[in-house]
Length: 65
Image 1 (cartoon, one colour):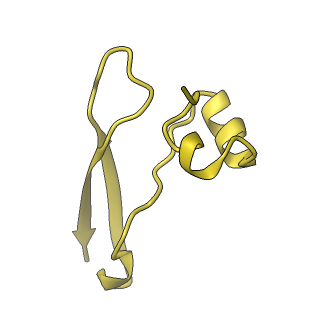
Image 2 (image 1 turned 90 degrees about the vertical axis):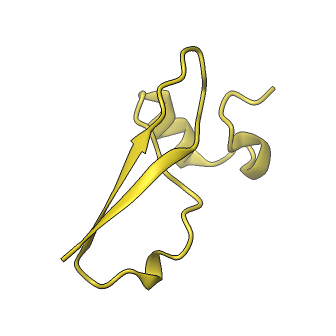
């Protein structure tokens, strides 16, 4: 089983995965339709808290100015 959920899809050679996740920095990826937001929008991702998990879907919210 891969160390990170996206490792199976993108392979273990992605340096961003090794560097960021290796330091405990979460990443948000594979977000669609951001181009539909107006310019000056603020996007926030709220993770679900699962014990013992290595990844989860997020709740994505946008504040539109």
